[in-house]
Image (cartoon, rainbow, N blue to C red; front, side):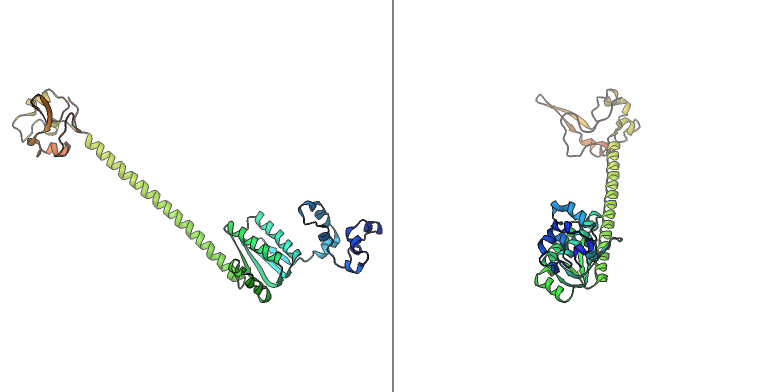
Length: 299
């Protein structure tokens, strides 16, 4: 089938046609020729011409079966290839890949069961797809490659880069395992975050209890209240004690000393076994100069 026979081009139209001008001396070579390829419609600057060609009956007839079919309805896209992955079919596969990317589908199975040859352009596209899918945490699986096609993958060392599987089921099992691992990782992360949050809440609660205990411990009551006005270890009633009669905020266990014109304070040895001192006083070894750490409000 010649292009002008399908498009019904007039002789005038043919004179302005680059394809006819190139092959008018050998019209037999016009059979099934890809005129849109000669016009370079796949180049970036010729997009307008490509849109025109896609409406042409001749273009539609020869592109009726590109050998590339895709099913994008599921989470895992399945692309089926037939025959020879030549320049045209590589472009068709690239268009499918662009559509997949626009739909954020990076998990793809490419069935090569019926592919008997692949050009270098097709190999390059597969490597590109593999890299882009891998970068998006997806994967490209080529299934059913056999015979000459498999030997091409092996000789070019692409078997060390691309994911190859015996059949679709093997690829689906890989994706299923990958999905389970992702779900398990998410569940483990959620559990770890929950555990960390609970641990943090518990630590805050314990810290609050400790702080409350420390705060409560600092609420020291006067010694005369503690002993209910009479220290059993002291013959003197609290009412007769000068520290109650003239309270100065200094604990009762603190004694003022004076030697050679130098004043100092120390803990009375008589107080070291006192229940009040043991509960509210500083450590036995603490020798405090100036005001002590613990004190009570004077009344």
